[in-house]
Amino acid sequence: MSRTLIITANSSCARILESHHDNNLLTEIETLLDTAVRLRDQDLVSDKSGRQNNGKGSTSSHGVNEHHERKHQHHKQFAHSVVEAIERADNKRPFDALYIIAAPEFLGSIRKKLSTTTYKKVKGQISKNITHDSLEKIRSYLPKKL
Image (cartoon, rainbow, N blue to C red; front, side, top):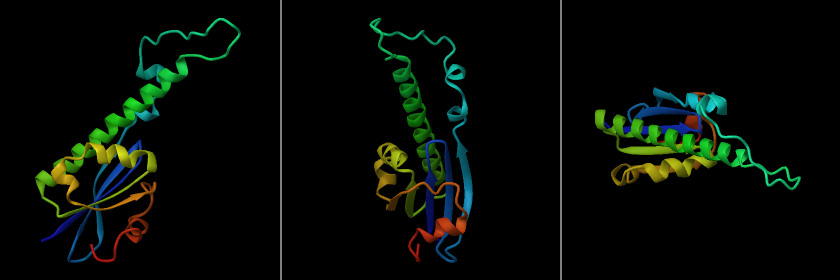
């Protein structure tokens, strides 16, 4: 029996769905949440360095860059977790096709981490954040025949 996997994701949540070619209905098989996104910076780094400014009355600070870097690292780690879940699903029960629907800033992160074998199974990619939409709404973004 043919099997299609559909991923909807953003930087804090990913849903892994599947469709069997006999009925084209979507079934959710796994949800991943990045709990680190919801933590405050001080919860993520225990000994955060103080802020520096250039001492000339400027309001620039290095703390902003540190925050951005930590956020970017968590973003990359979560993308890695999503790809690991896709690979696990394929190892458990191989799929024939993969559709990825992800927030624009997250789609590239997922693509970069896919193995060559898995990437060859990608049949469609949509740059849109529909992670929290209903299964029916998600299905409407996909081809009629999966």
